[in-house]
Image (cartoon, rainbow, N blue to C red; front, side):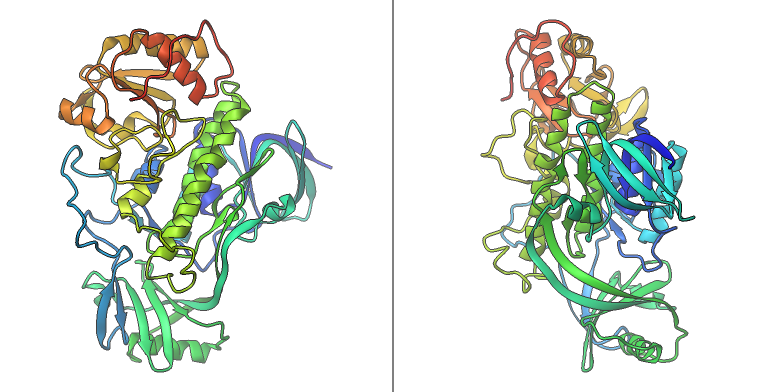
Length: 539
């Protein structure tokens, strides 16, 4: 029996699995991905990708390949009789709060350099495949995982290729991105918690010339008329999907008649592409890891489709969080303790997004008890303002909220480093462009640059010290300090995933010792070269 090996085996080749392969390969981690299907599903599901997802894709060079929505444009939904019939009221994903305080204009002019994207899943997946292969990932489509077992040193998987041949594949770690019915999760006997199955619905993907009905900027329609209650939306490429609110099997004639009723016209050419059957489930696994196996995406959290894009986006963020940690451990720079922070950081985010789903009108009727007392968060807080609490963060106490708007955090450790425009070597960049590879220390005082070099040497880590006003020139130094929550003598330590791990608001008596100790803790550094001294400074 043939046998080969790799550092990480990814099971599942949809959006989350492919993203994992891209992120791992971009860090030089040998990666094999197995997917039982030969390509993308003919009936795409996801279409909306958030600002944070585009920020993450930006770090691996995918930004220019994904067209974004114009700034200021938002997803709009309307209740209608039909497209050509009467239109009723619009509904918001996040209901407006008339008494909410206005968002301050400082310190940032905008939350993100990105606006988000609307691209069908079967259009995005080929882009991810090409990028993963270009970076060196081994994608084995048409290859199915049959079973696996793990021991203290790794995971041994038995897989079957499209030609029917079976062989063993040895990996140090495995990521299960194999969907909501995850065989890997079932084999690990990991339970799930949540409302469970909500309903089963049928859908039809079709092509029709309906662009005139998009001129008002509305792209989602709740169809309500006698004999038809359905949901209609576009993939913005000439394709539309009509989702029925029942599990009734319809023949082609019945499907075509339903499409014409939803459109409100029978004089247009309609091409039926394919039909689908969907289970709407809402469940989060009790843990995201078991030994050397990690769950991600729908395998870890099955979230119903929402206007917030919680499903695919949350999964992509999962594997981005995990990839740098696996790379650090596999390279020997960090101990396996670092991997414990994956579940600690991502599980609360998944559960919070489950609660946010049922706190909103779209799903409130399904599980009102789940969201009882849950405050609806601003979209920016949900997407850009989640707080991580784990051993990979210092200074994120239990007294802090689970999420807040980016401008409210002001450089709080455990949150995504804020976006501001800066100049570096004559080029205009986002602060986000400074992160994404190794550790970065931002500071104005030159003593922190020396401290970064010392910490890197002692711990054997890749640490870049950037002096504000010298290496990087902010548009406004005062706003920069406010955004990162530091004084002129302070420093902010950014993780390889762009999250703030630690900060010192002021200069300390022993910056080298303080930084080395803090970095050693948040990185779970495997090597300590020299004496670790000083204490933590987070204020």
